[in-house]
Image (tube, rainbow, N blue to C red):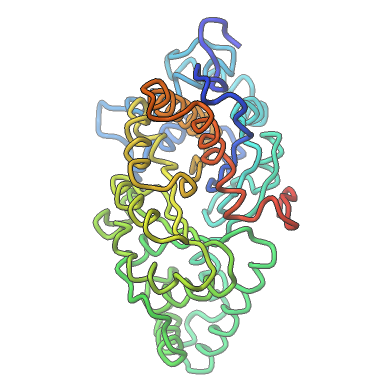
Length: 396
């Protein structure tokens, strides 16, 4: 490692003394191949198109954060030019690069959403490269799309009923091994959904119309609600995408307060809801987490994209949210660098925020260290049952 720049492991803050291995409660696999420069830069943004002429996605807070935290882990100085960094990456190859980067993050448990397409590592492979353990988060809409494959084009009542039965069985079967479910209803329709479980007749009618249309993606709000309630019935935690993402969603349709009626409707089911990402609605998410005991949230993905503003965003979330309600995640996707950046910015933000509150006398050092451990790992271990009998078997 280059001597003139530290790696991401240890920001200078006494409140982080004794911080346990992180539980990344929401992340994705990394690409197994070596991405070309354009593909690499594309992972630094939520945009789905090349950058504007004469610009680069490296010239973003995420791009600068990658250049700050990752080059020292590949024996380069921090902030080295992208071309030099990518050349060193090619020298090492994708496997060695992933091992170096992931093993530096201090992440002990990876809860991997397996619903994205592409040649990505799964929970076991991701965790092995990082020296941790992995569990699967099942994306509901991807599960539904796969289940529908044998029924598309068959717009009959019998086909719709068979599909509905198969979908219910698929969700129950997934709950046997998955640590949680995730919904991307924010992308498929928006979060302003009728909170009530749809009746069987409504489900069959919606399924018949969707299958007859042969549409590759489930976007019908009745079916999306049905999926959510199938997942709620299993008792597994349900992660919900909220806030910003790629251009496939409308940001104003992803405000977590649109879920308020659904939150109320699920309050006595025994199923925890976890609001993901949340920005720029992180204060709204903090409010929901504050007033509903079964609602939790994270600012994963957000911290990666706001860079040195991460302490401000984290502090804003902690204005209202009870400290047992915030979970750590990176939402890393495609690049192991995003695991490095997500974990490094979380640690530095946590150290700066809690360190300042301790220095001011508002918090005791003992409380700051305790809350830091809760946010880093303890809250996720409780919500996902990671310390009970179901364990953390790699690749489950």
